[in-house]
Figure 1 (cartoon, helix red, strand yellow):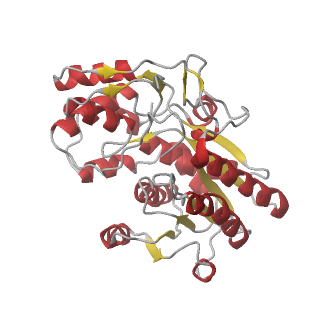
Figure 2: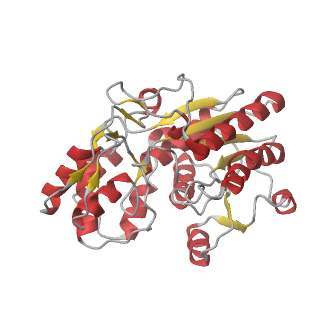
Length: 351
């Protein structure tokens, strides 16, 4: 166990956004090794989302630990100017850009390393055309613009569809079976990236994430908030798995050392499968609340098997029990929320 892991296991609670973001950007040894192995700047496309700011900061810290001097560039529409200013203060060079506008995309700086984080999920139902443009058309534009780069692209475990709850979760070699237009468009994103990787010989990695979790959003926050507010818990999805966002960030950076053509595909998920009912009851005990569950557990759930990533990069540093304690404490104290429910209970693929 490295020093970082011991430090995390000594943390009983997280009491400020500053402490949280410091922990979320703490690199692993694998992330640092990857920053040694690759040369040149890193550009993060769609950096202003839920994971982007801490991933950008981790890229800075991992590069510093590796003794490598490089620019970390963050691109977004930056609808929140405060987020842009915050990233700049951390040392990220920010660029305001609408990636779907070809002229703006063309003006972006070259970079040998690209993290693709742009996409659309929430609000996709009722706005299907934009969903497909963002999730499928844009990856083709990015592939052609950055054909000389390495690309690590975010995808989602939703491309697999629902699987038997007791089966260990979907693995990278499973045939995709997406449910709903969002998941189908995400599979389209993967196929477009794969096409350009093959035809233009672009080294790529595709990250199938399910689900990143921290204290301001995520499945655990959704459950804890409902328990705290004494809102009934829908248990029909049955089971889920999560990964501490810092570990997901670190595995994403580490994947730069595995990029290939055709793309290297990696599930990023925690090793523990939780039932919604048991997690809700555990939150009830932590928060001193009675828990009311409704519905009946289905035999299938959206589950990723992250064992291949764990074999490459080690087990996540923060297990689910510790995350739940941190989340319960945060919610009870009225800690900041991003106000972005995951809708993890959706079984019809509508978001």
